[in-house]
Image 1 (cartoon, rainbow, N blue to C red):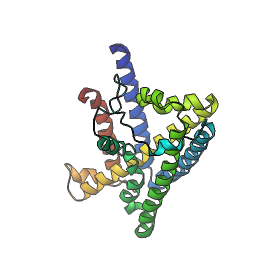
Image 2: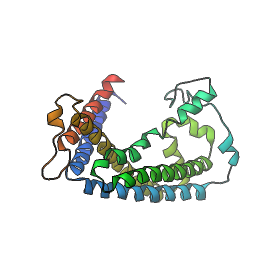
Image 3: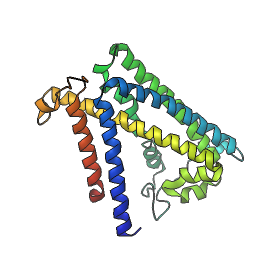
Image 4: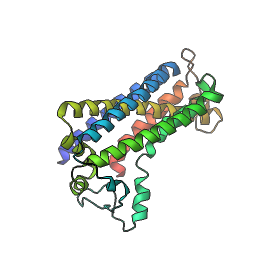
Length: 252
């Protein structure tokens, strides 16, 4: 991709992130009740989409090569042009790096803790929500990954796809209408994950400001009189996240 085309892509990416983050901040600003309803919906959405994806992958597999689930192969550094992970000769280290892939999902249950002050019956509701989310997401995620691995038509060809491997597997296995339907559900789920991430971050910012731990703390810890939400902390967190996104191309 030429520099001009790359510049247009980065601009569109930045504008998209800005609009999405602004919408996340607006939902948070208008009250924890609305945000809670959306994040609750995201839980059901993720559950349904992941179940459909798991069943679709299992149903599309030509054969179930169970040995894939217990076979470790070092494919770091591949494909050479755009490797997902840099080359390492340590299989153990490669396995440990692979465990980082789902680490971002911490925002799902972490948000429950950070919104505890705005939760009814927080002493029991928050711990229960955290434990249930970890248990359900762990089991569902494990089953879904098993289904995807079993559905791969050619392991070597999938490795050559690099970061595009998942989309390539869907393209090889599923009809267009089902593939795009699942991808649409995944995109919506990711959007709502962004909402949970901003909810978590903004409450943490508010907590630090409340204790005087940030510059301009008296301003940041202000609470909206109308919506009873940490409005300033919400928009500060949103603005900082957008600013970091704008800086990423220059830091890479």
